[in-house]
Amino acid sequence: MTASWNRIPQVEHAAEVELAHRGRPLPPGTPRPLLAHGLGRSYGDVCLNPGATLLHTPGLDRFVAFDAATGRITAEAGLSLDALLRFAVPRGWFPPVVPGTRFVTLGGAVANDVHGKNHHQAGSFGDHVLGLTLRRSNGQALEVTREASPDWFAATVGGLGLTGLIETVTLQLMPVRSGWMRAWSQRFDSLDAFWELNAQAEREWPYTVAWIDCLNPGPNGRVGRGIYGAARHAATAPVRGDYRERRRSIPLDPPVSLVNRLTLRAFNHIYYRQPVHATPRAVHHQPWLFPLDAIRHWNRIYGHQGFYQYQCVLPPHAARDGVQALLDAIAASGQGSFLAVLKTFGDRPAPGMLSFPRPGATLALDFPEKGRDTERLFARLDAIVQEAGGALYPAKDARMPAEVFRQGFPGWEAFAEYVDPEFSSGFWRRVTA
Image 1 (spheres, rainbow, N blue to C red):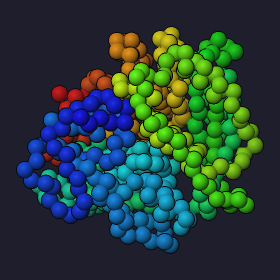
Image 2 (cartoon, rainbow, N blue to C red; image 1 turned 180 degrees about the vertical axis):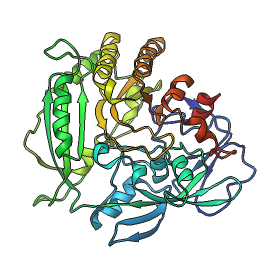
Image 3 (cartoon, rainbow, N blue to C red; image 1 turned 60 degrees about the vertical axis):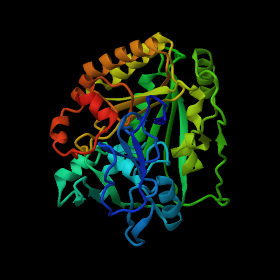
């Protein structure tokens, strides 16, 4: 059985093939359709291919070329962002966009057009991809660039791995002076306060994000209090600039989920009261950009049944009322989340046909699997998102109804023309059947 990061669903594959050499024909004789699979940090079935074949890409992890003067780098698509950071940061370069974990592959970052805490300034990962090599099932290798092949570029960036096997990625890095950042944090007691704080911070700070307490109400009696954080890359490292990550681990699966209403309410109350730092201070990029990476196997806290992540984006005109409506519905259900992240996207046009980032606000929450109670909550959240004209993130989805996908990604039929006839996924079959 194979599962994604949230352990929902768990499926059987007919074959799983380890890839170790680029430029070779896709393995003949294996059950079709095919799907590339990186480090398995996607949620749901976007990275699963029930009854068919997974092509494991972490063996495709070699650097191909690097220009130390310009920061242009080409690497195989199975290279992890962690490996890229360990190579690039000591040389004065940094990926312009990173998601909330560094344990993803370059190919996965392209296929899901991942975003980070700096979309309002830097856009999504695909905005910094200069080119890629795409291996089609007929053996053809396409050299795809935004300029020479804009249609194939738009289909493959954010294309959920369905246009073929991404073999190499050429990325433009950005210059940094160290691996450190300058960051500050501040409590806010309502969503109104968040919007005011966010508008000001985004004008001055490249990285911004907020944690939301979706169970305990603020002074106005409604949920929406939280902690806001902002950061930028530091001009210099601290005098004692050595950093060693302290990684902990969840060693075993608990018999039941450790995330329940009692533990969530206590955790959120304690987390909201943690010390904040209104004056910018030096922090290393790892704990600020990738806080959960410090805990190995953190997904185990939800037990064998797993959990769902619900991430949506709401357009600007509906963001204020829509986010509050989502939080009110969650609070009324009693199914809060300890991981509740709110941030806003900028106005940059999406580079991919199925790219998730778009102007507006995005809210991401984790929920333990509770059967019908969870289903009822998600149906209510879906209705709010649809009414607002928003969308759900395929990379974080395990149950999106087909009509919600089609409304959120109206270009899906045009995209389907670029899908490799021998590639598919559980997600794609589910939302296009």
